View 1 (cartoon, rainbow, N blue to C red):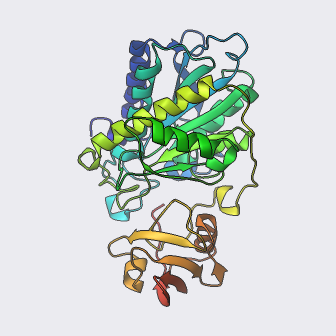
View 2: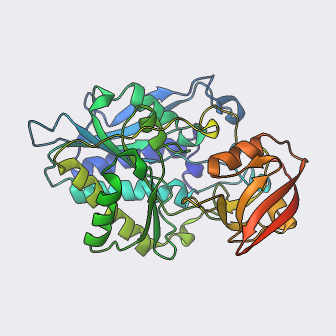
View 3: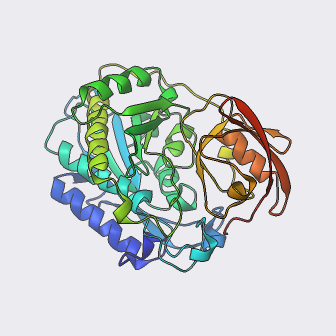
Length: 384
């Protein structure tokens, strides 16, 4: 509560950034630029969410630290480990629960969990000597459209951005359930699937139900690096009913699971920093729903399974009182059609919802076990 939900423009976010810098220094890392751990930037007035959030012109800071590489041939290459440390503040913009506007959104999983993991990885690796340079970044402005990571890619402090060997993103890693860990972006380098599988079997605290898949697009900071054609991995313990709500609090964090993710992520970063040879980058065109600032459209209220589901979008649940619950959608359903739009993946689902307005009535087709159900939903309005 004391950090005010780490919203852009709050003293709490400034204090959180100061704390991250202090922890980087205590771990023995070096500041990235001119003796400072801070990379300041200003929220542009034309940023898609700036006007809605009322933060145009506000100055914020990325927090950037270095662990220099030891190998003369490879220390000019960089492995970035990143996590955003901002959240929704009092939920004026971005909350999925309109009734909670004005209440502090602590964002324990989104993304205090990733920031804590970032600091733990820094502590684990700071006394070691990687071949490549490791750069640790706590990004700001992620909730307003990955603004901090976009700024860093344009002003990388480790010139040029092509020197980035790979980027590991930690966003929402605090709610491990049934040992399932998603490694999104695993298709961005040909070597990633085998490397991730090998680490999952070798790291003592790992042995996850590891779901490694997907390109590098998505609503988090790794997408900024993928757009610059760098290999990325986003570690993620999946969505839950508290996402972007005031109920995302510390008592729901799986602390032992978070420690396991930190151990795995540290070894992933270390392995990438010492790996011999290049990574074979695999590009993919942006999805229509992955670009632009149109928001997410009308509200259905499903909680999607973020790992790949063949032939549709599997949902892990529905929000209480949502259009999805009233329509009769259930956990485990695989949505294949919304209105006249075929839904093959999460981007199709976002595009389908963007094509409708609150109050529209749509038919939702879903697979439920061996049967196909056709349900009618009256779409709702998202909080602005």
